[in-house]
Image (cartoon, rainbow, N blue to C red; front, top):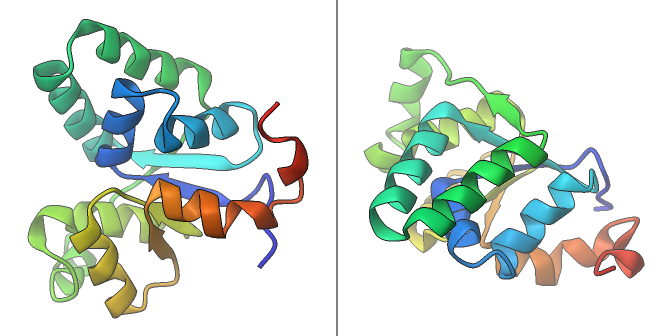
Length: 155
């Protein structure tokens, strides 16, 4: 599968938290690609609130400021949450605390769900959603080399 600037990556809170804490890591690198319009980034309001709450309580003001800068420079697609009955159906497939993440990624037809939560990634893979769940590192190693602009991405 070839990917490009219209490939939609849904970021869960774990990735946003990791990028705020370590902007040169995998999550930060992928967010920088979104800022450069090489891929599209997507989030939901509950994901943003969860990330902000955790960054504020665990990582401090510098990380919180980096998080806010992401929100300014990255043209995120804001995913809606599906209706309650659709979320209830998804609870049969993924754990209750992450159903909003899967629901939002599904609602916008994301190509990939990026998460550092291995349990969530396994649940998504077993449930056969239309999108694939990967860690940022897995995405960078296995999918990103198929990007049309891959050779010049690190510049």
